Length: 125
Image 1 (tube, rainbow, N blue to C red):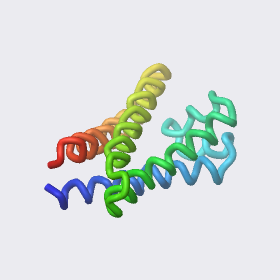
Image 2 (image 1 turned 120 degrees about the horizontal axis):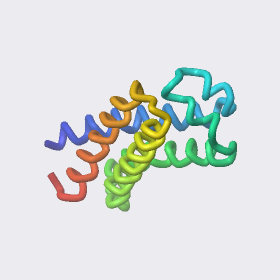
Image 3 (image 1 turned 120 degrees about the vertical axis):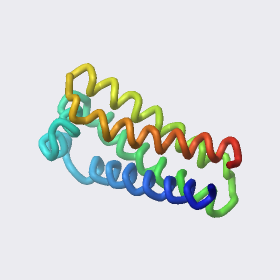
Image 4 (image 1 turned 135 degrees about the horizontal axis):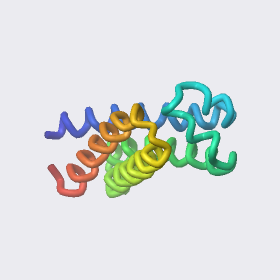
């Protein structure tokens, strides 16, 4: 189970870290037009919130790997996974509100991986 959890943590960290990095690198407008409908939410939020989301996603990516790998404050890894799950639930709700059904699978898959990591690390699988 450890290999499955590590694989999930790494994949989730790569996905969420890349999304966060892109939010910090690009302007809201550039990001919103990059891959609709996955990115159109950016056009409807303030710039400060868009950039803050990027910082939170990068912090989550670090939190998914570093604490568990070092054994220092290991509890932060399942907490980071829970945070990613919350982000995915909110993203799904936002896409549903806008009827952007093409975005659902990404939110569901990343949310499921985050749930697996959170449960696995909280329960010590």
